[in-house]
Length: 251
Length: 237
Image (cartoon, rainbow over all chains, first blue to last red; front, side, top):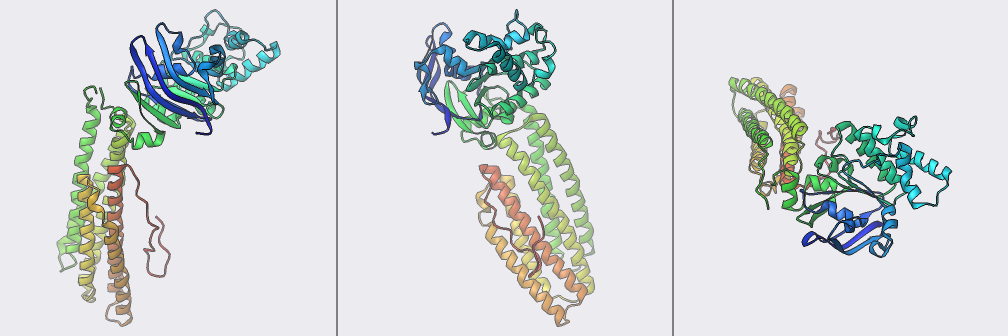
C-alpha cells in the first residue's frame, strides 16, 4: 500500500523452538500511531523487536519474513543503521547511570559519529524539547540522569531515541511503570510525535491504546487476530476473540 | 482459549442496568397505553395515573443516567458493554419523552372530554394512537430482547403515522373553519396529533438504537421529515 512507512510480510519469529510470532503481515502508515495489544506472551513485544532487529540479539532467537522500511528490506541492511532509523523506547527507563542528562541524549549521536559539537548541542536541545523535558532539565544538563524521576527518565529515553532522528519510533509499554501524570505526559508526547514519525506502541493498557493510537492491532498466540481503526476496534470489533479480550472476559 | 473472566463488578452493574431498563420500559409503555385509552371516554383517573407513571419514569431515568456515567467512569467499558451503556442512555431519554408525552396526551384528552365537542376527531386519533403504541411496544420489546429484526418495518409504520398526522391536521383545521370544532378543542386535538407523531419518532429512535446495539453499525438516518405543522419548518432536534 502506498504511503506505508513500514511493511511487514509473513513475519515469523522464534525463541529456540518457541514460535513466538506466526506469519504476521501488517503495514504501518507514516504519521500514525499504531497500538499493538494482546495478552502476555502473545508475541507483541517480539513482533516490534523484529522490526528493528533487536530480537536477533537474544540467544537462540531468529526471525524469518520481510520487514520493509520505505521499501528496503531491513534484514538486508546494517542492523546498527536500522536501529538508528527505527528507534525504540523500553518498558523501564534505561538511562545510562554514569552519564549526565546531556550525555544520555548525546550518546547515540556520539556513537553514530559525524556530528559537530554544535550539531550535537542543537539536537540534544531539540530532542529534549520534543520529549517535553527541556523546561524541567535545562538548568541541570550536567547532572546525573539518575536524579530524575521515573517519568522524567522515560522522557529522557525518548529524547535519546529522538536525538538520532529516527524514521520510526517503537515503544514497548513505555508508561507501564509510571504514575498517571507521567503517563499522561508520555501519551501527550506520543500524540505530538506521531505527526513526525510513525509510532508503534505495545501496551497492555486498553485505554491507553484507545487514547493515543489511530489504529490498533490485536495479537493472540503469536498471530494477528485483527487490525482496525482504533475507534472501530473498541466500538465494534470484527472478531469474537478481540471482543472477549478488550471487554476483559478473557483468561 | 483460557477460561473466561467474569468481571463480576461490571457484570453486576450491567445486570442492574438491564433490570432498570426493563422497569422504565414497562412504566413508559403503561403510561402511553393508559393515555391513549383515555381518548375513548372521560376518565378522571387517567390524568393522575399517567402523571404518576411519568414521575416514576423520570426518577428512574435520572438514576439510570447516573449509574451509566458511574459505570463508564469506573469500568471503562468497550465494545458490546459500551454499546449497552450508550444505547441505554439514549433509549432511556426516548422512554422519558414517551412518559412525558403520555402525560400531555392524558391532560389534553381530559380537556377534550370536558369541552364535549370535536368528537369526530377522536376515533382517528385513537386509531393513530393504536398504531403509535404498537410501534412503541415493538421497539421496546426489540430492545429488551436485543432483536434487531423485529424493528425492520418501523420506518414504514412511522410513515403511516406521519400520514395520519397530516390528514388529521387538515381535518381539524377544516372542522375549526366550519365551526364544528371550537378553537379550544381544535387546539387540543392538534396537540394530541402532534404528540402521537413525535411518539412514533421516539419509537423509531429506539428501533435504530437496537440495530446499533446488536450490530455496532449506526443505521443511516433518513433526512428528517418536516414534522411541524404543514407549511412550517421542522423543529430543531
